[in-house]
Image (cartoon, rainbow, N blue to C red; front, side, top):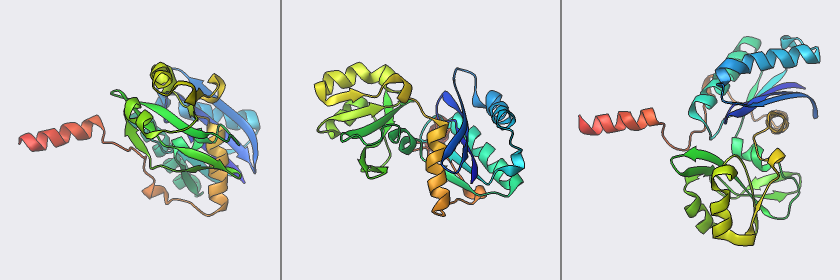
Length: 232
């Protein structure tokens, strides 16, 4: 199965091509330019360099969050448009699930953390079982301090929130806190592709019209709307 995967949940994003379980190409940028400026250019470059025509694609996978509200909307809307135009199936891959799969076969718990701003992180907890990282918590948005209170035993952190909160986590957890190497901390389009492929094979597709981001908490615009309603 020839599959295109999109990752736009954080500033580090891009796309990947998969043929069966073989990663054919991956392009990731970690810069401040918005995904709307670069995503389709990346897809075009991958297809061109791989010698694939876009109508050869047989499936799509997209990272649906949690993460940047703007980034997720761009990735999801792009996946919707391509799926509808090409008439191919699409699967939703939670961003935290893909991050947890960056650390295969560790015996420690895996805790992906993404910077949610406002002093919080998006997070969950995983344990590797067989060939998959199995989620043990719901998807959460909470402060690093609250996260530390929920953790026991050695845990490996992965994600972009290591940069702003790594020292705090070390101070709170001591040697129980371990950190993924820098090259494995950021979201990867190839991991989204591999998880997406397994979900496509299992028939876990989503109607493109029903594809939505996984936000966890309301956007600032939604909070302003609620405040306006309360004051009216």
